[in-house]
Length: 140
Length: 113
Picture 1 (spheres, rainbow over the protein chains, first blue to last red):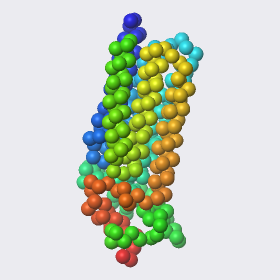
Picture 2: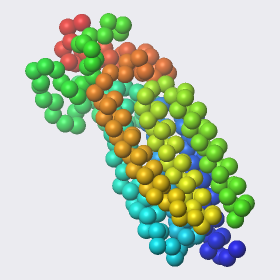
Picture 3: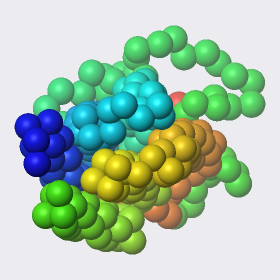
Picture 4: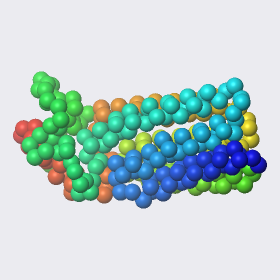
């Protein structure tokens, strides 16, 4: 076992441990945003560590560029998907507001003050609207 | 290297089981989206650990496909949820908060009820 193998082993075990940490966080954390925080650990740092270990082990093979491509792709796509999921979570009110320290989107008057709110003749498509009718009698 | 393989697969397996528990329990659809994403990343890590430990490059295209699939899956499901109401799946942890936010939003929209 050479020194490169030791470094690769440490990287692989650390990346795998981050996957375990993501599982623990997903089970124990209270709402969607906290769970996203836990689930992002293996998405970025875990994948980078595992890919580093794999590149160290497989250096010399012609297909190693694919591992680098996977790591770069994770770095690019993780913020995009996290942005979309958290935006939907906020608008659909899956967020525990009592756990928020700062809520910059939830002003006193405007539910979405970060952008102008256009008036649509047949209802605003961005605001919560039931798919099967304008009213939900169970909540009113 | 065998010890490293055993330790890595044990950690990844334990993480995958916990993620699967959240996937089964998750009160809302978005929890399931997040845990599906994490599960696919765990699978990609497992494939990469296999490739690294056994010096076997035949599974690396699968790795790329899994990484692509995680992104496409979570983004498309998030877009889909954006177009539908998930009232039945709102978090059971804060029903009062949900109802209050509902009434709040309706009042701001000028909802007559």
